Image 1 (cartoon, helix red, strand yellow):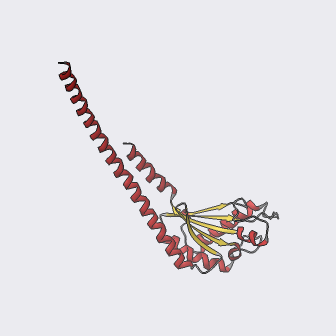
Image 2: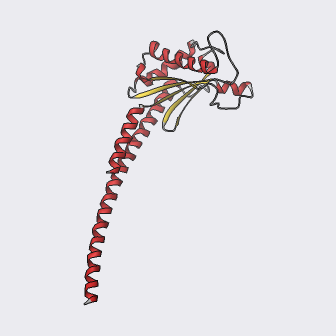
Image 3: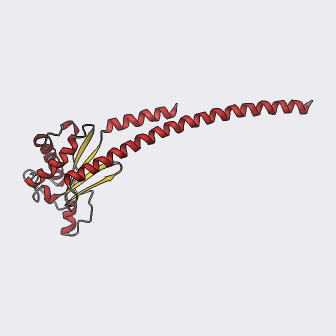
Length: 211
């Protein structure tokens, strides 16, 4: 009698275990589907980024050593050497710079859902005059000068533009030689999906994953 009862209990437990296992498998399938959707979204983003890089390299050209285009952390970055844009210690945009920026603007204008951050970078040589207090000032004013050209001369929507100054705190090389300081004086243009749209997408998918 005890053996029969034990056998019945074992059968019940096994049935419940099977039901729980089935539910777990269904849950895993749902999560796999949601993860797959996230991966698809990231793949689509990577495809858009690759197309953007291709467009930029075609428009701007890759033969100029003073212009570098690459992808870092999922965003497109264009680094333009200081000598193409400004005179030493100046934030007035030169004629040659407007030619290069015109090509960049063409690509930005074709991507209205993207934002464009313009970062000014300097070397560590101190600067101070009646207009500029320090390298922070110079880097910010260079960034806003580029933004004004993109907006006023080249028709970029100002809602897409973000000027930023980084001073000399993110160097590409040690500021110990003339050549290295020249490398560090640069403007970096970062083209990326609008942050709010990106976070909205991630938040929506994370909520789905938690269901």
